[in-house]
Length: 141
Image (tube, rainbow, N blue to C red; front, top):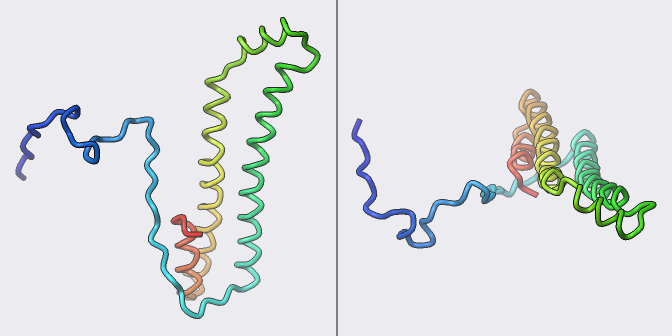
């Protein structure tokens, strides 16, 4: 096996399009979504789509509740001095981490539902619905 030659450029001299992303940059890979001609959703698929919608709404509600809880703990029954103290003592990094993780948790739950449905239709030899659920699991909407 041949070794790759070291690059003649440092990261600082790479053109912007070739600069590696920082470890804090979220890279989004867009799924290639196929059209499925003649797709008919059965009642089980419709129920799964409703579950997925509820999971998505629950993620949004969780984000609102988390924010409301933090604000409530800071300002409820507080005068200005106590509120300032509460603001300074709030773990904003933990709050930020929790808020950033909500979409990932929601996406994982939706992907798990879709993969379960994909497996179901694979075992039933229904290729159109299997392909549909594979697309949903991969991020197609």
